[in-house]
Structures are given as structure tokens and as C-alpha cells.
Figure 1 (cartoon, helix red, strand yellow):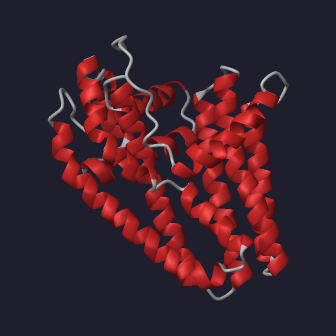
Figure 2: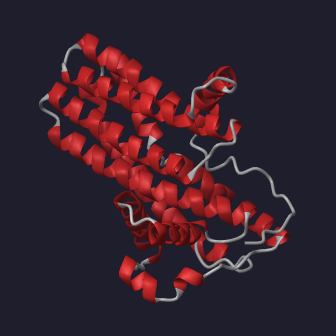
Length: 294
């Protein structure tokens, strides 16, 4: 696909603030030390899963010391989650499998940690279940908006649908169950934001596998970035790392049980308000050039 060569400003607004200002700088220092070593991004991802599972087990002990250590380990996981992507870019070895592995690892760690906290607290099942559902919904929505808006700004087309096309192409060559799961994950995002869902069998016969997308001009992309700036900032507070970082802080200060339900309420209200704001901004963004999705 040909992309206009004109460059637009780097897209920083939609990066989660806790990563942009805290985890990413720490990760950058680690990447600098690892760049010329034998360590690979996937090895970092596997390490983060191991540390995450140890954190989950330590949470399950239910002691003050256990929660303190688990919080520290979970913070290490959040930093490693930034390291693997930065290391892949530094070593120029980014891959579709690496991105898929990183996503799967994140959900494994997240669910394991929640299970560990449930066992450790033993009386906050409802609050933790709500926390899990809300955080997963936030993560799904954030991933969609991040991919769509960044590719719209940098390349001028709908990144979500292009990712669906790329995944479908890979499934045609290798019908991996993970690729199929990822295909439907992308379709779920499209259902939540666009109200449309296409199964794999329907997609094959729809002719959409040949879609190349509309490409906006440089001026249109700059206009889109300017108008989407406040919306990207709003979504930057809805990623999965903020709730996990707040779990870290509550663990370190020993206030997990006291603050868990208020945190759930805060995350839910914040997410709903972002969705409402997204809807109010949609029409303004759809009026930019060839934009067909937000």
C-alpha cells in the first residue's frame, strides 16, 4: 500500500500517561543495556509471564508481606511489558507473532493476578469480577482506538480493518487457532465501535479480502490529528496499565481491600464518560477527508 511520504507529528497523545512518563523511560534504560546482547523481545515477554505468575501466587498468600512483594513483582511486569516492544524496535526484529504473543501474555498475566488477589482477599469476589470485566472492556476499546487513530494519522487509513485483512491473509496460509482468535478479537472491536461483525466464512465470500482502503493526504492527516488530539488524550487514560499500576500502589500501601470498590467505580465512570465523549467527537472526525471510521 502506498502511503504519502509527508510526515506528521509523532503520535504521543494516546500513549498511556503511566507508561509515557514513568514505565517507558525506565524501559528505555533497560533496552539500551540489552540492545547488543543475545536477549530477544520474545524472551522478555516469556520472562514477564513468569514474573506475573509468581506475582499472582504471592497475591494468593493473602498476607501483608505477600501483597507487598506481589505489588513489586507486578510493577516489574509492567516495565517488562514496555521493554519487549522497545527492544523489538531497537533490534529491528518486530513481528506479527511477537505482537500477538505480547497480547496473549498480557491477558494471561492479568487473569492470573486477578485470580491470585481473589484467593488472597477471599471476600471481594464481586468487586474483583467487576474490576476484571471493566478493565478488559477498557483494554479492548483502548487497543481499537490506539490502532485506528495512529494508523489514520501516520498512514491515512483504517488500521483496524487493515489488521483484519492482514490476519485473514495469514489464516489463508496457516489456519492457526491463535490467528483465528485474534481475527475475532479484531471483529469484536469493530462490533463495539462500528456495529458490524463479519465471521471468517462471511468475510471470505464478501470480497473484502481485496480491500486496500482510502488513503488521506498529508494535510488531511494533520487535520485529523489536530481534531482527534483531545479524544486521544481521553482514551490514553483507559488502557489496561493504569488499573494494574493502581493495584501496585494499593498493594504497596496495604489498602487493597479498602480501596478496591471505589477504584472499580472510578474506572467504570471514567470509561463511560470517555465513550460518551467519543460519540460526541465522532461526527467531527468523520468530516475529515476520507475518514470512514473513528
